[in-house]
Image (cartoon, rainbow, N blue to C red; front, top):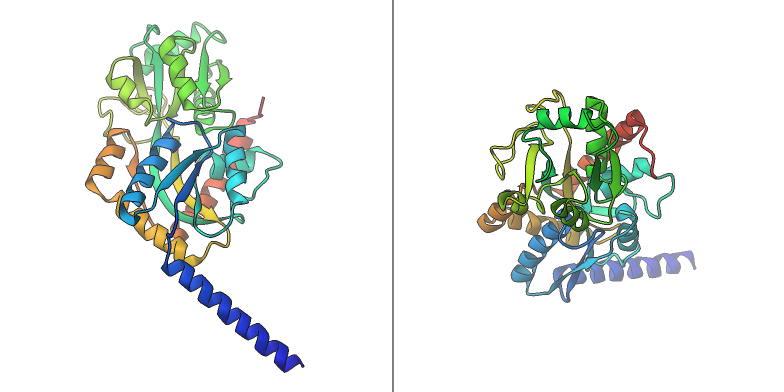
Length: 324
């Protein structure tokens, strides 16, 4: 009897493997959905739509962008974690969802490592320090002096508590001794609108949504957060250059699938994403917005995410960041 059972199990396993291989070979056979755990028009949304459009062109299947914002990206991320692991639901993750949040929240409805299959790192993005045009400071040193003369009176916006924009500004406050009020929004679109409108004084948010408005003269850029200047705004100094030595902070974005998605599909997606990011029009578009295309293997992306989780956990602890 045990021999018969073993034979049946072997046949079932072979049939299952054959089914997975057939599914992978025919992938994609229907529309793909990329979940974005933030509001439209932010950096995550822009990158997802850019990659999604090229996947549609390459494979002839529609790629739908599914915005599910809330709880600093946790709502959309949990939704994607529980999706069917067949390659038809993907998630554009960020330094927030898969770097900061695991160290910021005591309880999450997902495990950033165990519940996802990394596909590819997509882009690295500096944060940009921008102020509304009513602010008298013309550079970062002038702004620091202005803020010190108005301790506790200025406010800054971010796409949400615990976002890279929030923690980048908290790091800046710690290194400069400034006191400013944090106003969390539900996404970058609201931050940008209120910054242009003068309801908030500044932000240090992901670059892509802000660069066009800086170039249009609607807001003023004082610095970028990384150690190198951005080709998108080459005349804008880094925070370190502009008066805060040693400052360095930034963001990143990547594609993941639910855990247990067939490896053949994960690698097919990874290879295609890498190809897309090397296309001249995609590279030019991302560069114009201040994003650096990356790519890479699932293994490289997995190692990157694990390192980021450890890094941000230390930052959160050292800065004693608490959610409001």
